[in-house]
Length: 88
Image (cartoon, rainbow, N blue to C red; front, side, top):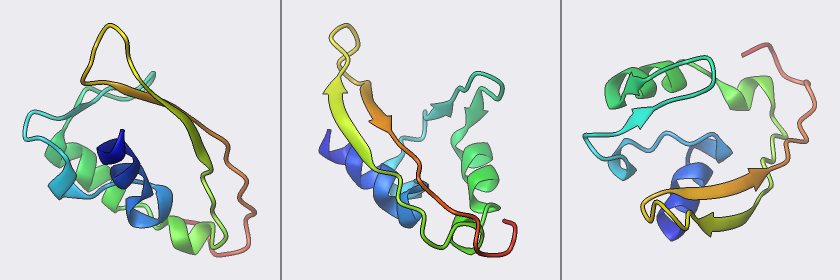
C-alpha cells in the first residue's frame, strides 16, 4: 500500500514516477490499453496537470490490497479541482 501511495502522489497526485514501476508494468483502462511502461510514461508525461488544475487535490482514500491478487491495490479518489489555469 505504501508503494501505491508514493506512486499516486508523485507528480502532484497524477502519478508517473518511472522508478516505482516494474519493467513488466502495463496500464489497462476501460478505453485505453494495454500500454507498456514506456507508452504509459510518454502519455502521462505529456499532460501538464499543474498548469490546467493548479489547485488539484486528488484525495486518495480507502486503500486496500485485493484479497485475490495480492500484488494489486485498490483505492478511492475524489477529484475536487477547479479550472483556473491554462488548458493542459
